[in-house]
Length: 97
Image (cartoon, rainbow, N blue to C red):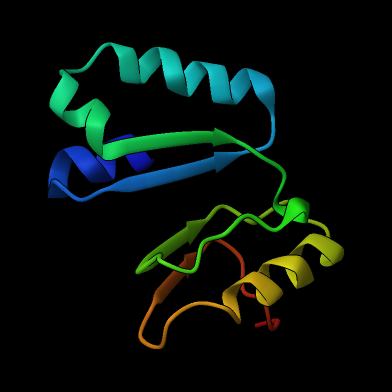
């Protein structure tokens, strides 16, 4: 997702993936593109429970469809540190319907 967004918008994109195999797949995909794109995209193999610093983020996308309630709460805590006006896009509501 972050690679596609950066390709289409020329923005800086940062991806966080917990699963090592998916992270490695993303790195392999990124290697196939020109260096200009690779300079705009950063992929991290991190656990959101480690609370990575995302305070400079202006748009957040999370595919949280299968996240536990505990991880949902961790995300909400992370989102609390974001700048006013940051856009959050998620695949599952944090607050029910």
